[in-house]
View 1 (cartoon, one colour):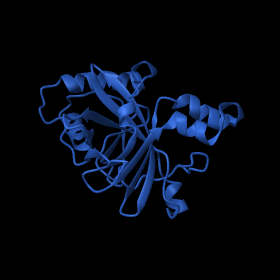
View 2 (cartoon, helix red, strand yellow):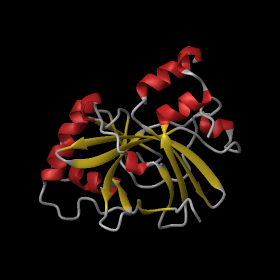
View 3 (cartoon, one colour):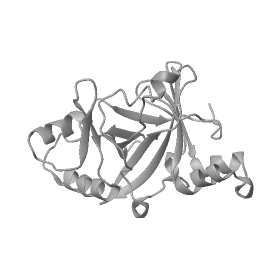
View 4 (cartoon, one colour):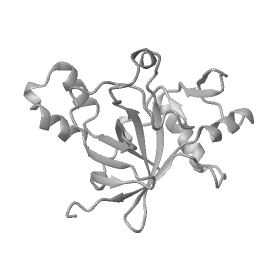
Length: 218
């Protein structure tokens, strides 16, 4: 997983799905909480393979701290408590930076696309906006990990019923997709209110995975 040569690009797997997108991160520095148990190789419930490493350790492996170029040092400082995630699925490979954080004892991940396949059309790529998405992260009793993205349909319903007020823009061919533009602190206020709601189906989503650890000894 070479970080230096990664090209920011279109995320083929998640951003075409119905997930809530934000211009700003869902975490703030004081809520970041790194979980070493997430490190390793995993297989998801859709036969995708996940390689999850410490972003900080991967950066140091490729280049000692004292020899990093300015742009690499900036990345190192910004994401030293994040993960670098490579997912392979049906010959597609994408990279993400995922930053773990905790609000009211619930674990979350902030996903941001970090790479793409080489064959993405450059003109298409130049029209892409790279956004953050919110993931609810739960360790199950059997040791597996469940990750669920906040679904855009849920937010769409709340906006239409005027049950939430949070800064956003709409976009897309039909102007029917949402981009949250609120600050990270405002986003966290929203998360707290959303989690406190009585909606038992608030984390129903079409974008979810159960991750099972791959035994390295096999």
